[in-house]
Length: 320
Image 1 (cartoon, rainbow, N blue to C red):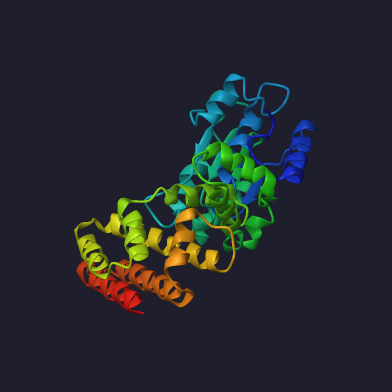
Image 2: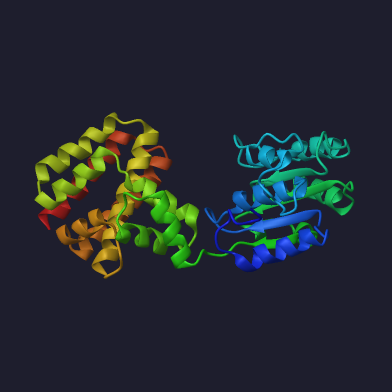
């Protein structure tokens, strides 16, 4: 098994495998990369390798590996407060006490920080004391999409593992297995828009499985049915705030992809149809309108007002 579950990043995987084989693994790693780059996948594989009892670390077959991959190993501990924007110093102080209790069953105690950039400055300083003089069995995995937010003193104590985009051929093969119902053009467009990061590409393709209102929007724009478009916009007032925001993001994505299609880039079929229905200026107007609505919705502007604004914009686009 090794690190094969992480696609691409061949140099990083070779370096990690060699370090583990020589028994020279450090005690603090900073796993850096944008959203969807595979940080959590790498952290789980690295934690499994540190607990692995097999030869090809991680072997994926031994008891410790299976427990880590299933997120049930008692000595692999996630440090986070997902309900809060930041990870407070109190959580790190509790970790300090726990870190000096020997592992329950594994060779190591692995602490994983999925949002290391969310650690407050005081929390980082408290963590610094621990990673400067860790227990012999302690390992700390800091994951961050913005490592510059970590204190230089913390970064200097970490071995940097920076994730890279997955090569196109390898990524498209994976996307074809994951999304066999999507067209090659849709998969290629998702890869290009994601910058080669599979998590982002998968999210784009999943978002394409649109709410019925998105499919309806496309059909009405193609048919240039102004009255029905106004009615569609007005009907969105009945949606929950979360549904409304999700729909606005999906519409913005569709208009943006249509702009790319007009520029000759690969795009999903629905975006190509949209590009044929609206001129570039109209598509840009729609993208800006979605941005305006999203900003206003996040500022708690009433949903009824926003639906009226959408109706006005769509009517103007049709008139143009």
